[in-house]
Length: 230
Ligand SMILES: [Zn+2]
Ligand SMILES: [Zn+2]
Image (cartoon, rainbow, N blue to C red; front, side, top):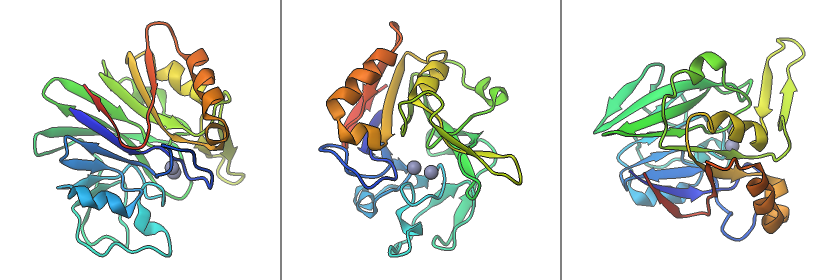
């Protein structure tokens, strides 16, 4: 699988060189995971799989934006901006790929899914934004050739809030937590969706991430447009 990370910036105002665009991942020059920027449509994806419908992952839900062409989309829920979204609940196959949705906790308002993407014997996990993932779903991971996850927060625990009424949590967990969890299932973690802490001082940020990395795991900091192969 050729994995091109198109954008590595979280939903924040700050940017840094090589980290200016919102989430999008192009697989084998064929389909997209998330569509944080309209310009990603220039790759002419045959279909798009959405983790969740926040504007930095689905540009058209931002008020001033418009999706003015037809797309074939799979997403956790319907959107008034897209004509025919296939709402994902169960594993599905498309072309020569197999997708296994994994429910994740991230937002009170939008439903969120991570996906295991498989082709031949290669297995990729793309998490999207993540406050938490229940233990029972982690059992589905098996061995993963690569995990692509988010770097919104560097501090342990990230930024998790709790809804007073329902008690439900939402937000983003921290990189120490994510690297610890996913190191159990893979030796290759790629980070994107960076937060303000990263943009303010990329050099120091790189060092902090290095300090969190276990010895037998490779943790890479993706730049906009960077390609990876598994
Ligand atoms: Zn989000
Ligand atoms: Zn996001």
